[in-house]
Image (tube, rainbow, N blue to C red; front, top):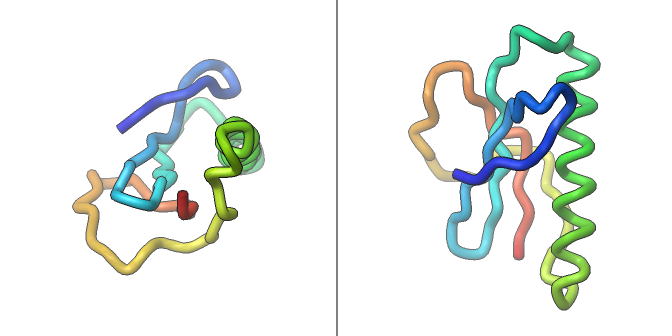
Length: 85
């Protein structure tokens, strides 16, 4: 899993690279409220898409659901979405 910056620098999410997909996983955060938490997720999606689009348009857009695969996530972790690359 990879990390990147966030509000209050707590990184309440991780990425899983699975072949042609990057899966965004959120982790529980006791520091932020629901709105800030969702704002963090949106910001990381936007930043990730911006970086990937500079790398030969490698991103094909976010899908806001979990892929049809079990990633055996820890308790409290949720797949927020994934993008095909």
